[in-house]
Image (spheres, rainbow, N blue to C red):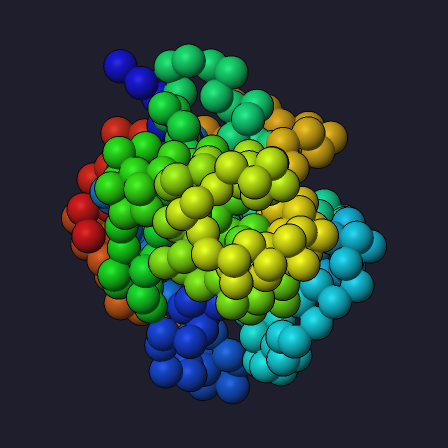
Length: 315
């Protein structure tokens, strides 16, 4: 029987929650809408997948190695709303109460930390990894042991991608998702791609030729009859941008990290701390749902067992 690790792309989930829910504040005016949405998704994932292990990764608020490679990386993104950054700190406090380890590292994004942890964790053939995210770039990490639980719209509509689902959706494997995005580009991150190549054309080219290395090799050899001269010219003129885009989208799997799977074991947390922080955020409905089966909960029982935890999360 396989064990299961949940990896949370925290900034991605928070952004989805922030835009999906109306602005919520406590009576003292503290913004908590994104935190509330994050908690809803967090509890939903625990209920659905019953993980043995769970951890969360955050972006570090500083330029990354990608900015050094391409100074225009994410340059067109508007500044985060002023009420958003404080909710990142609050979310970390909530995770701390649940005894969920948090990873962040200067110079890297949460995606890269997830890629590295996923690589390290799956050295155990009996471990299944499920990544919670709203970012399509993470689909490149899918393999026989890794699945992606993608927030499609808001925080309610989701899809679980595995190798089969990805192939059915795009027509190619996760290994080639990088090449697809390299051609298509990503306006949200200001990754150029190839001008004039949209999602359908990019998918068609990747399904036919595989990697962009193979595509450009065939074009230069003059062995392609299925691409008209207009697109050949566009592709050749944008070769540098295509390979730069692939390099920017590639997630790093070799970041130096002190990762201990046992420290990510789910269920060993202090109920009183969880209840206190949720009540301080005025998430009373969550408190009620979490502890609904607890008759006069004895909060002096500090630790919660894995078995008891599953009862609490029958949401």
